[in-house]
Length: 209
Image 1 (tube, rainbow, N blue to C red):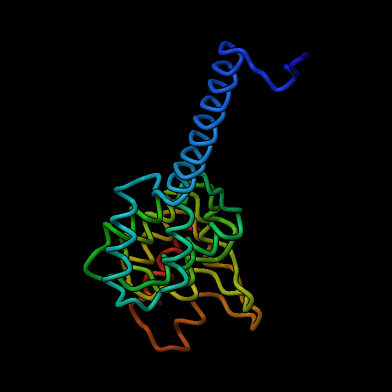
Image 2: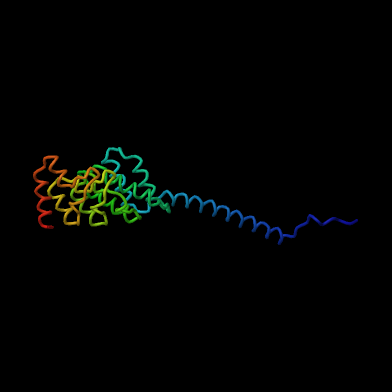
């Protein structure tokens, strides 16, 4: 009688096959664990100090800048790379926010967004109502004091505080630039009836003549 031996596997072959299955199982487990770690990494803040400042910003603005906060969280997450438009929008949003009692948080976020690649000179941010501290920070970090908005106004057309005017003029703001209505900052100040502003701008014109 002849016995068929086709299905017979020697012990050594069975052991080798079992080892391969174990190795495959370990590899699958490592891949799953690696994917889980990567997802967790992508959600993790790159800078924990900035993450705390973002949450402070969110709290101290009363939750009124939800879209901006979500953008800031995203920019600070894992390996996310924001484009220039998103960074510039974030920078503008931080500048527009009102944090009168926490200039440090506002300044830290501005510096951080600038370090990520935002272009401070790409839009006329100095035409907005900024604190003196933020105004100085902007000028020291590349903002153009002579950039004009869609009405042709520069920062000098808007800022009325004597100290703000001095900061702008020392940074190279040009008081002779006219807006689309053909008015200089001095003429604007005259029409608004602001004697201190008129005096400061007249002194600048006299010094420059």
